[in-house]
Image (cartoon, rainbow, N blue to C red; front, side, top):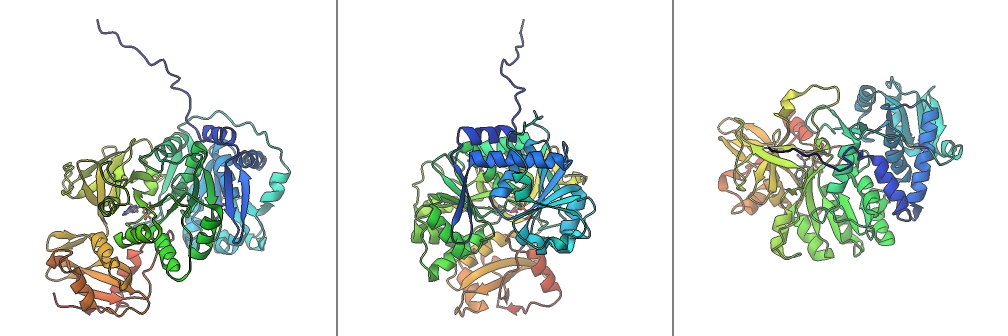
Length: 547
Ligand code: ADP
């Protein structure tokens, strides 16, 4: 008779952020958190960071923060933010990172919706928080990091971070936590709709951090120094603050210094080995490097995600700085990393062919399951050609939104990403558009992402964003919104000609507009909602080329 056996493993051992902190602060206790201060760096070891986290947890407990209660942060990337990243979840409360670039109305909406009880805020961000303060209905106290005019906080209890920590001793006893309990939360940045809350668990955070460390992801180890320009207020800075302590890599945090000059000074001074940023930051570095000498020689790899990176940018970093930038894909709902586009093993690193592979949006990361589905719900083949909506599931993929029933976002347990694309036989996927950005011309799709990428390859183009506009004959046609490089004189007809042969003739836009800058979202993506609104209000001067 068949006898079933059970596992003899300690399967109830919880995968928690506390165990990441314990590991990072002991085994890698001498690895460092390095915060840039504009002209020099502030260094602290992970052992010191852990002690401060213990002090912070003791102080928050005295302030009445209990299990499951939300603590907001309104901060740049720096050591104190890292301390909160660990103190809050490890004490059993929930870290709610707030996007410092959101309009006051949305900040208030998010804080009230999450019911944040305490908000930790940078002194230099008080002016940004001030317009929301009167609307915050649940916040009982603010903890201010550094100097700043606290009068903008009204009558609320105001405490100073340094004073709070100085009054406490290390040694806070972390509670035993259920790995499925809430650890942190982040609201989507609302590129295509209202912000919705995603709540990460200890388990999802732990597994995601592990998942991003393998050689098919960052391959980070103790010998790395990881610089994240990805804000800690957005999707846990791609999980890097957790991956760093798990792997022993030191963590480089740029503070408020997010422009190319200080960024590249930081890299050169502290010899960062890995750097992560959205394409607009990489583009800024490249442009800056054209006028000022920069030293990126310490970087062994860069990662880019959040939006499609133009091929011209990958090529320029490769040829000018011998720097491989690898593209990844993810969303707030996927913790965020769902795939990284490392080329297959038989492709020579640094070769031209390799860049083509790095132009894929990603290769599915172990732990994540992905599929593409047609409009009528049929699962499509992995042949690199069939185009459908990407759906994902896995231990670090959200299964619902916080207090926002949205059954339409899920399909039988799979998250509907709203991204349209292909998957090939080997699990490389390519996003061709967001469903809200697709251009449907005469019943066929035109990929705005592809047109943007090709146009960005023109020597005259600094930025290119393509949106759909209504068309009597074809239903929709592409409108290319172009920012010319300084001094470049290309006209619409020149750019249309540039595209001939690169895409099918019917995909070449005949509608063009030249703008000073493509509007960006709070996390630096092209804001096509704004472009569409400008088009509708007649603000954009559209030139037509001959089809
Ligand atoms: P928001 O939804 O407000 O933009 P997110 O940061 O969660 O905020 O964005 C996730 C989206 O970003 C994805 O659904 C996808 O459309 C886009 N994205 C992320 N990485 C890439 C990439 N490598 N290529 C193309 N699009 C990407």
